[in-house]
Length: 245
Ligand SMILES: N[C@@H]1[C@@H](O)[C@H](O)[C@@H](COP(=O)(O)O)O[C@@H]1O
Image (tube, rainbow, N blue to C red; front, side, top):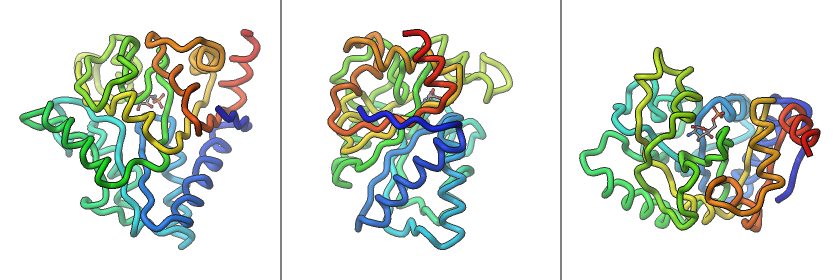
């Protein structure tokens, strides 16, 4: 794992933006894996700025998102479909035929998981997967205990993840109890992984990632075995983390 230390959230976002831009500019049919949550918001606004300045085109880009809540319609304000449209897709000309998210409102969730894997395969696999880090080490919505061999699947969200994400909803009761997430093996199949970590609240998880052994109890630990992982972490996440060692 390559660790890139940056000063703050803004620098982390700019660095990630430049890595993704470079990949898009240099490849004919780039396939980018995207994440939601607070962490990549500024990365997306940075990509929008670059697009508006004519520095990057998304014309040939295909995207796949990591996950989606089960039970929310696509236009629900808390769905990841809605998040992605609002934070990126609608501002850079990414059309519906270019973007993919699991369908959390499908009548056949299991089939949807298989279809999603097939779509990724047909696109030639993911070139760069953007990841955030859950407080309990989850990646995507793969909670502790998820088999490293998992592919896109329906997951039960842990109480800690539901409570961490409750800030986006009016109350914790509204946070769905299930989601569809790319599995850990699906994420690991990406050619490159870009893990973004910012803020003091992530220090413990980052510390564990950098120091822990490989264990399904801490899903992100699998990243240690991927041949091309770049962690971009800011001082708050990293210094607090290092001071614990
Ligand atoms: N499912 C999402 C993940 O895709 C995200 O990367 C992670 C961190 O979220 P945040 O960036 O808001 O801290 O947890 C959420 O539950």
